[in-house]
Length: 421
Ligand SMILES: [Fe+2]
Image 1 (cartoon, rainbow, N blue to C red):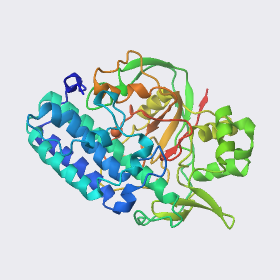
Image 2 (cartoon, rainbow, N blue to C red):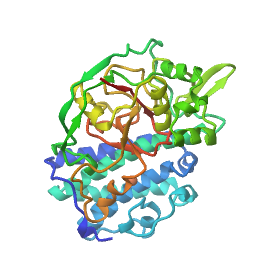
Image 3 (cartoon, protein in one colour):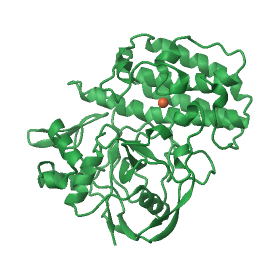
Image 4 (cartoon, rainbow, N blue to C red):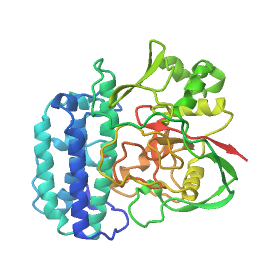
């Protein structure tokens, strides 16, 4: 790799103490998530899109070794010469790697060896963090946000793996749940037309895909005050939503046919009642929760059935700013299932938008390996906005652009509706 070409984002004004504290808190959360898994749990890869928990733990560590320690810590000794081959995800500039779908074949290194790898890198990072130059601070912040993204994937990936185990393992016991109630009444929020600012203003961390900030022309619209609920989605199912081709995009209907979809992922009917697999175990559906684990195709079919549409990502961003913003989780609690719906734009499911994932006007891919972080994925994916129950503390903002292919369902993905005025 040509580490000299790495381009960190804008300089961040963070004190060394704050950066060290953040580093250790984020790294510890990954280990807390994995601590609930056995070594066997950490090994499994249930589908090509999902990665083993062990791999997430190692790959996030590889990021710090590759982009921080090797280029910036003179004399740094790599933990293992071949680990770059094993734990590089998709960085062509960093060399060869094993195929994504083969990550579950790596029975070695063991989970314990990954623990040692993490400790080795953390010790070296402790010395590097003493420097706290703007370049290092920016790269550390990128590495921490990268690790937080993998924390969410670790949760969704192990949920998929557990779901296909007939034992339906419990990852964590459910907290005491409030009695089921109705979702808050759906209101239609008026969003004025006109020219609005879109994207990150550069104050604090963002990924490169959130910039540059630019202007967009919006037509006046109305947007739902909350995402679609489980109860509402059941009406769509009961009305034959999964059997009516006319409601679906062509690709969506083909997927329904090919996959045999009849409901969101993880739902099944037993003795006439719907049950959902959750990381707290099997549970009856709660009508007051946001519908979750639906694809873009299902979101569009529901919108067609309801005679509405999905908001664009620009509409979603403007509406969220006007109505309370997107608040990141403040506490360190690990949450793995959406809580009941509330009003507003801080919800426990990512929300599909009607926008294709494209570069903003003026977007430039940074030179070097870090430039591969986002830009090369800007095709064949749709943007999701907001956050989910599994999004780590501090890792949410109104300009955040998540993105997945339209058929993806294993993320905590829901949606809200919009309509033209
Ligand atoms: Fe990654």
